[in-house]
Length: 346
Image (tube, rainbow, N blue to C red):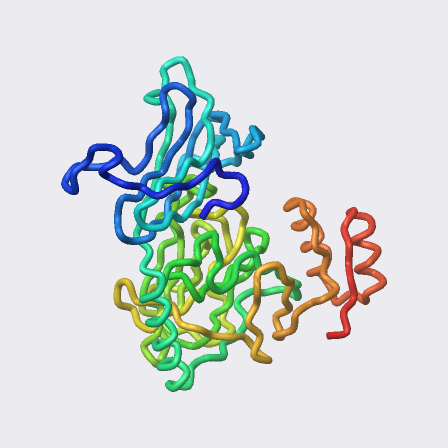
C-alpha cells in the first residue's frame, strides 16, 4: 500500500489492455503527458518496490505537495540529492504513485532506479514463527545489548517494520539510531564468519540496498548474528576470531541503505543463504519497538526526548548519553532543545 499521499490504486486486467498472458508488462511507467509514475504488478504475488529518482527531480503527491528529497553519499564521498519511495503492491494491481515534473527530454530523461522483489508474506510469516520456536527450544533467546555508552538509544524500526523489515530475511531485526562511531559490542559469544568494512557509500539510494558494511558472528547453536551498517574500516576482529559476549568488535556507521546513522541487528537461524531471521530479546526480556528509547540494561527510558528533528535528536542523544541524568536535568535539556520529556510510572 502507499498511504494517503499516493494518487490511487486499481485492479490490473490484461484483457482491458488487450494483453495476452505471455505479453511482457513493464514494472514502471511514466506518462509522457502528465508525468504520472505508475507501478504495475501483473503477478500473483505481492511485491515490494524501492524507487529512487535522482537530481532534485520534483515529485508531487495527490494533493500536489512536493515530496521531500534526501542526500546520498557516493563511494567517492561526494553527495547527490534524490527521492526514494518504498511501496508494496498487491497481486494484479496498478498503483499511480505520484506526478513527476517532466524535464525537456520527457520520461526518458528522468534519472530513475528501482529494486523490485516478491513478498510471500503469509507463508514466510508462518515459517519464521516455527523457526523462532526452534531457536527458543535451543535455549538461545536472550542476548546482550549491542551498543556502548549509557544511552538512551532510539529504536527507529522494530520487528516487522514497514521500512525494510517486512521480508523474512529482516523481519525480526532491530534498528537503533546512534552517532557514527558508537562502539558495537558482541551480543553473544561466537566465531567471526564474515567481515565487510571497505564500502563507503550510504544514504537513501536503491543502489545501496545490498551494499552495506557488516560483521557476521556464528553462535554456538549455529545461528548467525549480523551487525550491519558499521563504519568503514572499524572492524576490530578478523574472520575466524573467537569473540566473547560484550567484546568491542566494531563501530556503528551509516554505510548502505541507511537514511540515518544506525545499527541494524538481526539473528538468523543459520548461516545458509535466505535463512529467515528469528526472535530474540535483551536483558529483562526487553524487545524494543519503534519510537521508543532504550537503555543498555534492558529498560525502556520513558524520560527520553521525542524530537521530530533528526539533528536535534542526535545532539540530545550526545548530551543524554554522557551521564545518568535525573529527570529535572533531562527536562531542562529537552526544554532548551524545544523538545518534550514525559515521565511514566509504567
